[in-house]
Length: 242
Image (cartoon, rainbow, N blue to C red; front, top):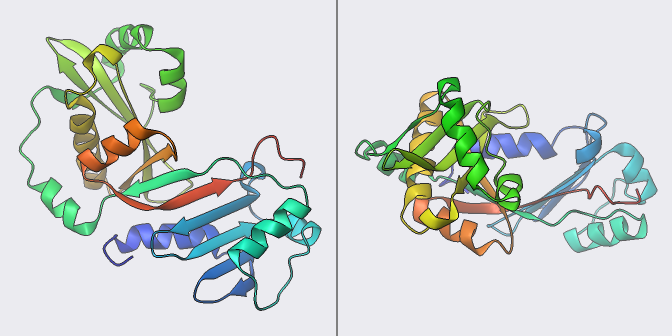
C-alpha cells in the first residue's frame, strides 16, 4: 500500500487499531474498541493487498464469542458475527489518489467551466437540485453547506456539483458528486472531482471517494478521475438485530 500516502494509511489504521487487539497476524487483525459510535459498532476493511482489519465494541465481541486467540480468519470472524445476529451493511468501495497521481494532478491546467461554489450560489444550487432526481440527490449527498463545494457549468447552467466534508475526525475528506442526467458522459464529473480534490490537498486533506460495489457509473468515474481502489469498507447494518 506504499503507493498511497502515509496520511491515508495512518487514517485507516487509526479506525481499526485502537482498543484491545484480540487477534493479529499478517492477513487479519481484529480489535475491541469501547469508543466506537453506535452506527459503527462493527467495521470491516479489506484492502487491495489482501489484508483485512475489523473492529467491534467489547459488548459485541463478547456476544460473538470473540476473545484473544490465535488462528482467527476474516471468514471465521464473519461466521462469529452471523452467529451473534450481527448483519453488515453492503460494502462500499473506497478510492483514494496515489502519490504518483497527486503529482500529475498538481500539474493539471486550470479547469475551464469549473469553480468553487459558496452561499452566494444558493439560487443556482437550488435550481440544480430541482432538476436532479431524488435518488441521485440521496445517493450523492451533495450539499451547498458542506465544507468544500465545486460545480461544473455548461452555458452558465450548473450541471454538475460535488461536495466534501472532513470524515471520521481525520485528515480525509469524503467526496460526493452528482451530474444532471442530460449532461452525463461529457466529462463534468471528472472536472469537478479533480478540481475539488486539488483544493482539498491545498487545505491539508486527502480526498476520498466511496461507492457501492455494483455502482458501475461511479466505478467508471473513479477510474476516469485518476482515483485508485484502496479497498472495501463495511459497517453494521441499521437493520441488524445486534
